[in-house]
Length: 388
Ligand SMILES: *Cc1c(COP(=O)(O)O)cnc(C)c1O
Image 1: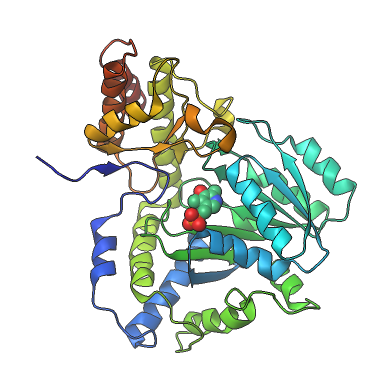
Image 2 (image 1 turned 45 degrees about the horizontal axis):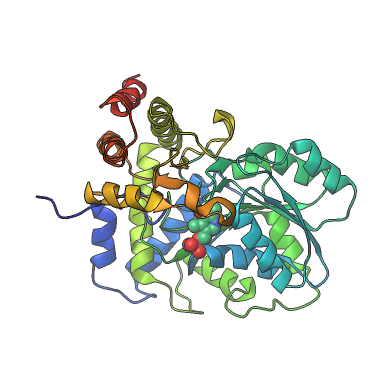
């Protein structure tokens, strides 16, 4: 019997064997010719995945929260006004983080399962003098997806920098950073990018870089300061050796492999695959009578799903049953409703077999926990979508 369980949480995800092999290869010097080439290739490919030919990519050792910190530390000066558009847990985190750097933060908070209406955002921008706004493409605590394009356009209209937390979306949801005029799009390696945890990844617009260059005060975080990292990124892009802090050599090698796999699949095909998988999960949950946090399909993420437990089902017991059936899922994260729902990550290399195995395990475990449904109904509903 296979002893390994299938990891279907919203990061870390299941990684491709080639990616893991790169991680396990002997570590080279950070100034070895082959590593310089690898780092440079990864920077070049990031611009393609982000759809940002004009952007400045950064690859820095750390988690997604460091990517958020890099944006906050470099773009906020004491007293700057920031607007945080929150669709869950990670919006709140951005607000806390920006305050550390002295920002005056206003939060526009969406009701659970909904997004903040565009008119409300425009109204806020019209009536105050914000330096930047942050928003979460897919909030991993609610599985709510925000449409970034109109917010990018609003940022341009009101001359406000736009920072997109794309930790749960980059390489899984459609992103056109340049076309949509978004100034920072940030993520972490362990989500849809498909590399074990440990890399903070972001692409920064020319406009945001010039705002940063005009700072009057030094960046209050030494490790995060772009003054330290920009020369390093430029050197690797020019295929030259350099040093500030030792890069995560093996993770960068794994990143090069994963970005190659992503671009070989093609962004359009990859996004379509994620849409189809998400739809299969939604139809499966509907067939079982499970309600989801996002209030309609247009705000449903394609990278994860967040259904409520059915009435009378104990969440902890259900997740335990599902784990016994070989599938690891995640519990709730949003404090207000933490115990009432669970989360399934379905991003990255996820395939039809993973989807059907997961839905089969959920369906069987629900039944064991006392939820009545016709056996096979959820797998059937998912198959109908996948076979289209
Ligand atoms: C996972 C996640 C983060 C935090 O990333 P870490 O790597 O855990 O620090 C931030 N924002 C979103 C939307 C995420 O999904």
